[in-house]
Image 1 (cartoon, rainbow, N blue to C red):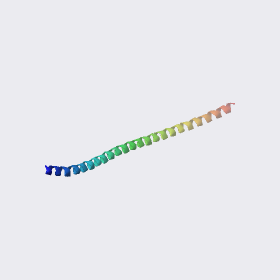
Image 2: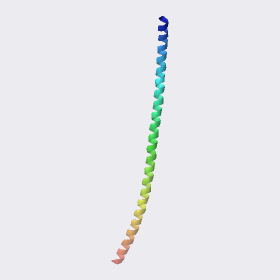
Image 3: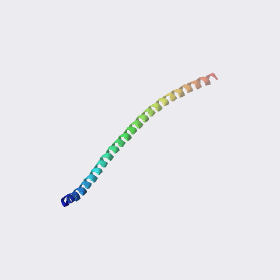
Image 4: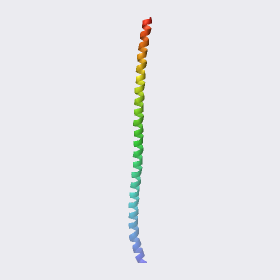
Length: 85
């Protein structure tokens, strides 16, 4: 019986240490996976933001061109009305 107790007292602490290191390794791997997924999500959000900003800039340029055209036409209408008076 003393041999079994002796082996048990040696193996249990070693097994405990191995399990603790295994759990720490598993935790580190899981954290790295989650961090990677989180970084990918932020990257996708940033890409969508850049695309939205590009579309908004194009829309503003189009609106500015239309507004310039309207101003030109309004100036022409004002000239015609002044000539009539």
